[in-house]
Amino acid sequence: MHIEALNRLQAAEYVKWHYFGDASRANLNDDQQPDEFTEIFADNGLDYFAVLAQDDLIGVLSFEFPNGQITMNAKLAPEAIGMLKTSELVQLGTEFGQAHYHDDDAVQIASVSPA
Image 1 (spheres, one colour):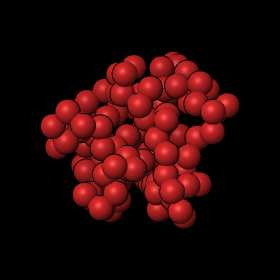
Image 2 (tube, one colour):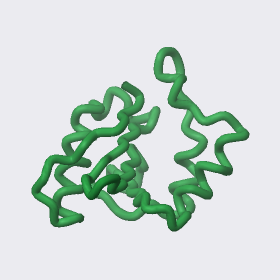
Image 3 (cartoon, rainbow, N blue to C red):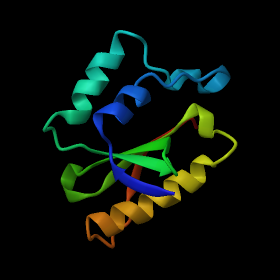
Image 4 (cartoon, rainbow, N blue to C red):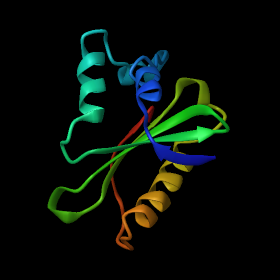
């Protein structure tokens, strides 16, 4: 697995992820998808990264810095459920965030989905 900046093609795939059952609360409806796509590339203090297994998008991480603290959101792709645990995605994201931003402080977890 590796992590890279989320590109437009990956973002277009990400906003259309569709979950079933209890995880469906993580779905974006058709009205929310354009706003989420725009937010990904806005200069708003949020950084988005793709988590890839070979070339397959299996997760998305976003980082922001309220009050100077690294805060992370992690979202596992529907197709990756069962292949990767959300706890593994969080661990991977935490380690990446600390290394990428050169910060040894704990990364705060804002949200994980599906939970």
